[in-house]
Image (cartoon, rainbow, N blue to C red; front, top):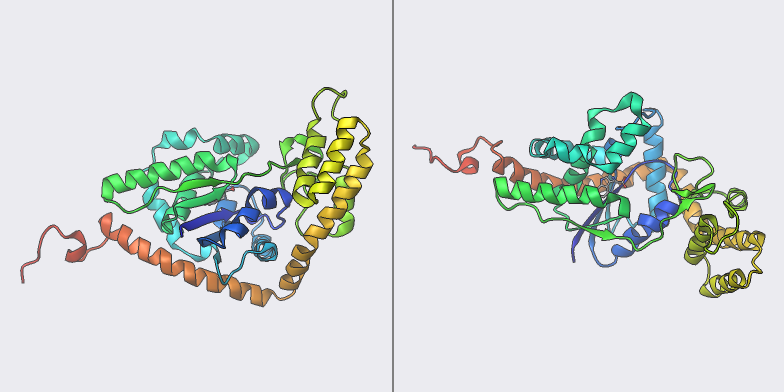
Length: 337
Ligand code: TRP
């Protein structure tokens, strides 16, 4: 049984891309591992955001995760900022991180381009906070999508460097790559499905008519019909494989190969099966959102459990890095009575 850690940004509206790319494997890992899952609100502050909206987004994210099958009794589910130790460890790791390794990060370069008016130090240091998240719980397995592999490498580097400088403390966390399904934007299948591209995503809590209309409008043929399947159609098949029965997938594949596939039929079937699969998530979500007090309670309980682990790690870290004044911690000079 390994300690698993992963985090997700509180976008408020998690979508099928998040589900197939990450959440699905979080749910599966709960059965065999000791899992800690965090809603990373501190990471969300690295780009412009509305402070009045953030708490709502956090609650909606929590409700959706629970709706998807994250069990807050079995796993630790909590909000990152509720456990102050994240920022403390982040600072200590800051002091052993080479600047160059941050400037090389693809995600930093992308986001810096996207938010040219606000390239703040938090955006640069984002991967250090992520490393702190993971190391705080001494996690050895981190379920993430492909796009987080570079950040995981930094987490491993920092674990190694800390251990070298201050003594063996952290395991080197390994990415657990989710086999899935890079889900592309419905309205632009050359880009990843994303909350920040309207029309690109199906929210996990979308009502049936919205699912219908989003799928119906999905881009299919982007250019002249060539040899290979167009990215839009390939994306619809990816979704079909995730939400429909194998016979259904086989049926539409055959139709495609024989050149008799009608996209309207494919879309109709997909919308129907997706609606069916998402119905229980939406139901659970609405139920939880109608009792926000209970939801906050669940998250407070999660934070308590997370804090117990975090506190223990930080006591060890403080002692090893020279932040504890007692003689027993520094342990070089014995006091004379
Ligand atoms: N950066 C991750 C993402 O955008 C979210 C995240 C924050 C995370 N802290 C983490 C993922 C720790 C794994 C482990 O998807």
